[in-house]
Length: 289
Ligand code: GLU
Image (tube, rainbow, N blue to C red; front, side, top):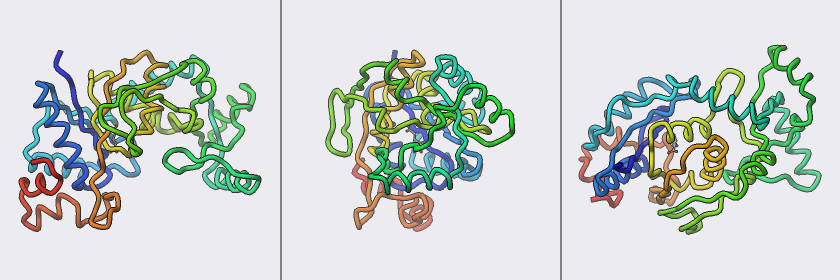
């Protein structure tokens, strides 16, 4: 079976040089290994994703000379599949609802910080500080049917206890040079959100379901997602899904050394194209000639 690669952008802005690097690296690896290359549109967040951004993504990738298999998988069209995976985790007793608002969570974190400190996840966000896990099942049911908004969270302690030791094969490297067999540390993320009342999925859940459904064997993506791989490995094991190999690549930075952002026009592929920069110059600039 040929290896399967994917580039999985979210249509919540225009692609920049960092996306060009990631997409072209996937394409190169696929070509070198006789593999397949897929494009997946990660548009589960209806408040931030827009069809015109998706259109722009496909135009910009085509302009770079990239081709991909059709049909393109669009996550918003597969919510039932993520819902089924979520239901399996719920049936294992690994999911609970939490009802705190963002403001309430911020208040709890501030309190815990003041009481001696509260841990942050690898992205720098505070771990979930609430006590929703301890709410009795009957009360949970009442709250859920009351119409109050809620988030469905993974009971990380129970999930880690069930999954046991996890690792992954890292062919690239992490932000601190981590390479080879990496021990997954999902507990560092706390009780992550898997779904919300109105969205039956999350980035973590949909990415592992899709990588498995699409037969992705090599995940090539930026180092900013290196630590998220710990959560992905955990969900893969809990759901009985195969583990792809991972290759996290360095991030393209601007002249001041900052990570690129979708909101910075100067490094956006659209802007560069409008300025007359050619695809060959883009490749040169990101070191993929
Ligand atoms: N959709 C994610 C992003 O745009 C990438 C997901 C992945 O490569 O795993 O950052």
